[in-house]
Image (cartoon, rainbow, N blue to C red; front, top):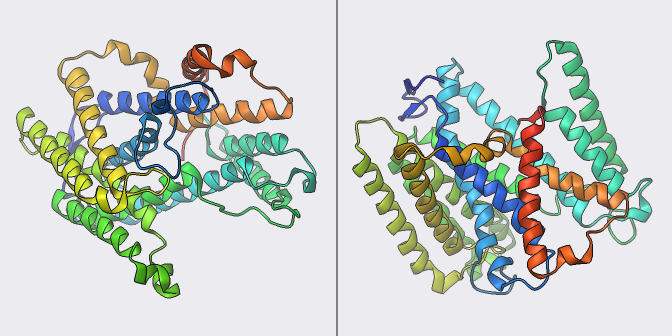
Length: 405
């Protein structure tokens, strides 16, 4: 794609962004997905150091796996200005951009709810099919609905999507949960994809309302953190009405990470004449502000991914700023691009790669298969987790099929 810049409509974004793929962002996305597959597989391996496992729910702290989810959120934020600019450059109105955001959010919420119910809360005995088969049919339906069809027969593409929607509706009706099998498919929680969906929706709205300017976005970030603090007050927790109003506190914290990604993009790629030193200087100021604010809030709310505390979010976002700044310096400025080739499938097809391990797990449930014991222990298990992550990326590289919300 051409490196021409696009001056966004003043009614939506005030940013001047390059209409091209940014290799550093692609590398960041690919590394995050690789890390996600690795830590998820490693979670079932025994005998690893504690920093390779998620922090226990009742602990105050964070480990390497606790950084993967916020890295996803951060990358979602980095992509929002580019996606908005590209759609406006293609002639979309603000309403069309907003409709696209709503459609993507709905897709993420649907996928998240189905995936959560496939993992826990189900009552297999009350269902007419095994949870493994139910899961496989769900993923097959999802592939039909959100697959990217490259053939020219539009009628066939519509028919496949309709079949996928019908499959999702049927599977939702067949689902049973709870001890007595009377519960139906429901958002026990929204799942990782669902949480990303809510954060993406809120951050996109704030980005458009702030017209792509850094100051309104930073004010929005502070207001989200204030909202979280309000939600934790004893008076709010004890009042049914106020507690209801404060139920979005975790989503507010997640959205704050997305906004940090948005601001980072504006610092590095807003073509306003700033030089490299100024861009890194702005990123450094953001880094210091995030760490400082996180340290100030830590004594009151702790550091916890499970509870989505502000300090966890701010520290994670600060580390993402550091990682991206390094990748930008290495890849975009120094031209060290050769090693990023194996990450490109993950960057171009992240949703499919995200669900491939879930499809494998569902298939193993159907076939009543388990990993050999040596692959779930110690150094052998660690090696297998790393190899498995690269296998998934290699598999995606050979697949011509793509998914897109």
